Figure 1: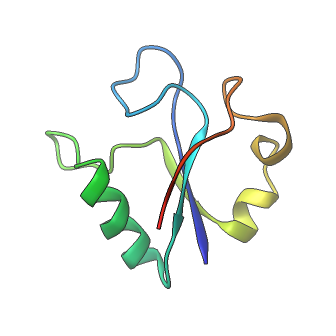
Figure 2 (figure 1 turned 135 degrees about the vertical axis):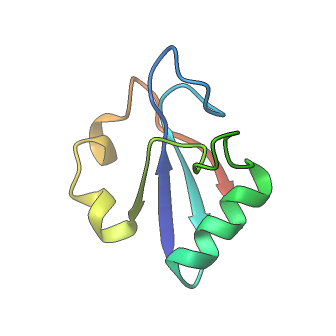
Figure 3 (figure 1 turned 90 degrees about the horizontal axis):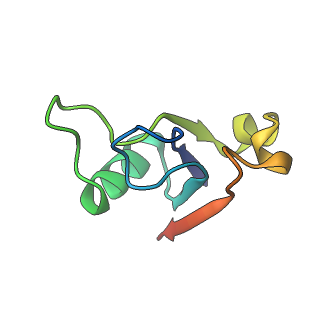
Length: 78
């Protein structure tokens, strides 16, 4: 399954400004673990992104076709 980790706009301290990371995983928990291995949690213990969607949820957003803060896919984590 694909999971989409989205990023905020300017002023956020996230790995990217806008767009998203796709994580290929068998479950939500596995996707979180894989993402955290590449992008460690914030100092407050939060996932270092704006939001997480599964593939079906993400395809129902405007981001899927229009982008997120002017960006699209930033990276893929296998």
